[in-house]
Length: 398
Image (cartoon, rainbow, N blue to C red; front, side, top):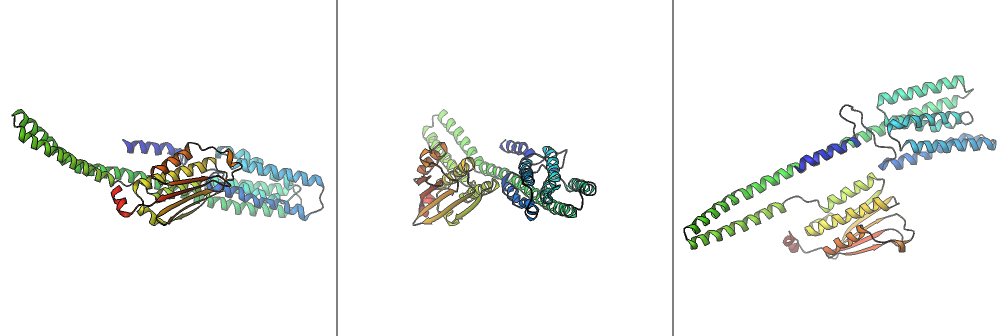
């Protein structure tokens, strides 16, 4: 039942990555999503070459500078809008960007720089055949405009064509890399689900093997005791009841051993998960983790610490305006020291009130006798101090 619901959940999530089976064309993640956002916005730095011909051609009328600056600002606004749009809404934005580039090129050959951004978007969002057709149409249009509308502007034409080809190639490569990542993620999720199903089946078999014989014996002993009581053989019935109690205790112990063998999410697994989640949302993550710590923690400690780190990550994703996260787990004098910090600035620490998330962290820390310090002086900084039990205590806890 659980495996079916999990598979149904995965199917319901699929449209976010792929279209229905009728279409094999993938739905690409937005250029303004996840890690791509920083690169997509950072690449606007190269669009500043738009102003190089204007600077070289000084002095120019102030009207030319004003018009070109407005044109550039409008292009950047359209570009930012475009990378936040789904594919079906892109054509109108790309057309406006192209027309604006052409309009600017009457006074500024530097507009060849920004035409390339259109080619990059086309290369990323479209299959190779569709992308090549679109770029070929744009180039033919540029060539025809060169011979009909512009005089002596070979630089503009050549620079536009070269820039478009190069950035279209970058878009195609980014598309291939993204498709490969999507395929890997899908395969990893499938393997994870299959692994979970296999693990459940193994647990079911183990429990069946452990409990099957014992329950049959308990049933027979109970029936025998009932018959002995009916024949008024109380002493013999007592012996069977005692044997029944012993069998049930033994069964309970065997079931506990079987259940304790179930693989739980380790602290290292949780750290790997939150790192991937933060990086997918544009954060740069630095992890300092002494993996030898894991073996020294009791299961209750490891579970609670994994949940605390998960909650800290959730808080960062919800509220932080920073870009970097540092998570450190070190061992000092029999203590595990955990520090978690992001670089989101805190304007007024005195105004911050702890909500359910931070309260939950304090409660989880208290449940494993860990000391917790939460500081908002400049940046959010959470420090946990956990006593690592001796090996014998860990075994007892297990």
